[in-house]
Length: 83
Image (spheres, rainbow, N blue to C red):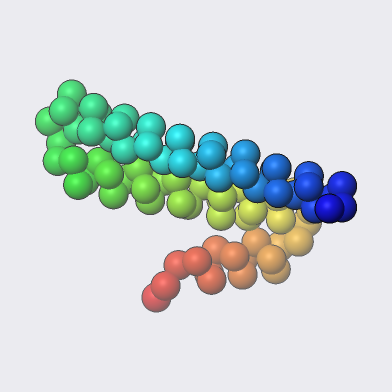
């Protein structure tokens, strides 16, 4: 097996484990936040999921602005917000 293929498989496996662990922690933390604040668990869960899925798009827009690629930044914002 190629060295680069082996590195890709190992990297993918590590990323998958990290995603599984952090997703579980996000769920547990959301339940605790809902209990402490008295807010509904569905509200807190929706808020945390919305924040965690929007963060990569926000970083992509920030990087596009830093690269002075304003068309990409505007397209990313408009493309991710359905009208």
